[in-house]
Image 1: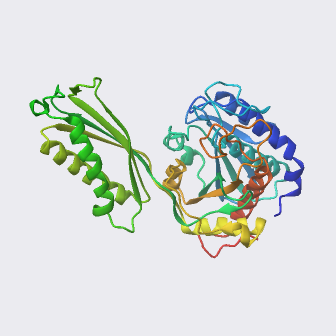
Image 2: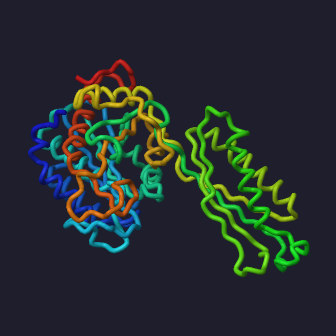
Image 3: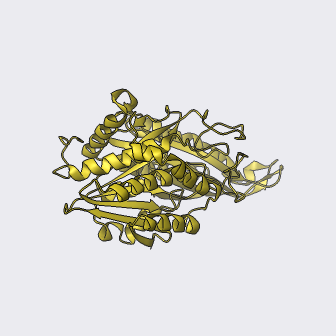
Length: 407
């Protein structure tokens, strides 16, 4: 494992930034103090700063030499509406808000890379540091793109990195193609006819119809899509009724659908609608179906994924890079950036949780858990990856050639 010497020397400074951000979490599109800290820090290193893209986003631009090539490096910066259970010194100071996904660490790693590149300028081209708001359900990546991110900063490729609990610390995981799933939500409103529970024949029971729908919807996954196409349909809510002896007139079902391919999402949505309408009609009810597509699948470009894996191997060696890492059904709005530009999203192992300071919560060190904390041992590794990736990418002679090897 080789961390750049100067980055390793700056570990305490990078860690202090990370822990300050952890102690002052801000939710999606509210990251004003975090954005100000990032902007001021970048400016202090002589990096050109652009504020307010995607409401609270920050973009830093660092140019050197005459190479017209440009690379985008992205970190997300929002927290989650979770009450932190940790009691160590850098715990959240904002009740009901917590960096439970490691975005504080993502910001710190990218700032560490920015500091090194600004100080040493041992690259030829342009590095665009993208600090994105509202990854947690707010589609901040899409907002930045819609407000002209890639028109103002026309990078040839864009890269993202996420800490991954359960993976051995300071190891990398990456793969070409889908690495994270789409995120879609559905809601079913069932209209029946209320009746006394002792006389169900006088009504049209929306609960009974809803139960049949839930069972039938799993047939969409097991009998309508190809077995080789991954998809998950989870019913997570069923609301109906207020009294023990009354069959209600209405019921509501909600849940999520996750897939790795848009064509599979299309099929699932269409078949769900057919099943819901037919089942409602069969039980003398009416149904309204709503299907919302939140985030598309996160799909890595083949060449960029291979290039990133080569950079990773140059840092940690072959054994600590899984270049065919198992994809996850979780979702990520970096997917919007990968729809707009070639690029690669990767995982950096966060370990099992043994790194947590005294006073951590009793829960697991998992993402979106109130006992989570980012592993500061990753800071130097993540910053080193960003630096070496930018240097190698800008040094390469063509934008998208799988033969490119970092030197």
